Length: 308
Image 1 (cartoon, one colour):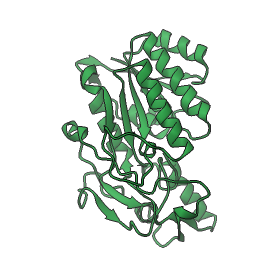
Image 2 (tube, helix red, strand yellow):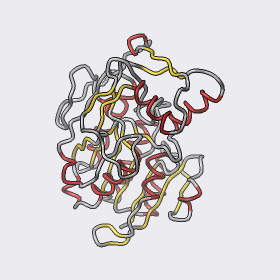
Image 3 (tube, rainbow, N blue to C red):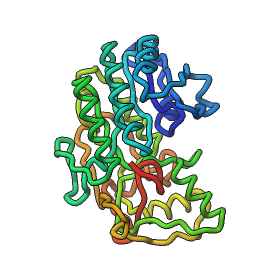
Image 4 (cartoon, rainbow, N blue to C red):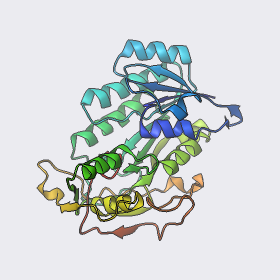
């Protein structure tokens, strides 16, 4: 099976490459990654074919997809920088996939929901309040127009300890500079370890195309405020006691989803054990749906201090 993954230098894309199975559905896996400018991590480079491409460039993407002719396109490229980089890139990738009859798996976000009426089921209507949430919803709709049987996966904050995800690494650099990190005490999310998320993505990709189709909610097993998440990630990295200041999302200049809790009904057959963000590799979680520090914590979608 030939699989093209966008965002190959990013957290999810690079971990998909690290954990790629030798076969999928009885067919050998041939993995291709796209990058924009950054290089894929050294431990990934030897396992895949890497293609440098600007995903907003329709002609360049059409040429690449036409040459690779993937069976599946996993659109995992992540940015919040502009509507073009989110929506235009997604439209371009989805249309190119449709032109070669490739299946599509698109990684989306919990912030397609306003977060004021949790929890949200997979069939609940989205109501985003942020630009990024609106762009991701627009992208979901574009994917489904181009490839009606696409799989849309929504997750929450994606975290990693070794190496740290971008948001967590940013917090570490702030502490090393002697400055405190400020995190929301009144915004809660369901962070998921990147290893667990990509295991679920590979399990979805192993399903027949028709069974993959539609919306999948793939949150982490705990509800944590951004503040508590930051404290736990710091402790896991041996940085307990570093300065973390509680701030309120209510004071943010633009609206933010306070609690976009996802209900994950479809994932139960995937067979992936979900772990605490700071637990041992095979350690259990104290209990699904546990809420730590909901009245006191905060950040966004890739790491304790970043967001989808």
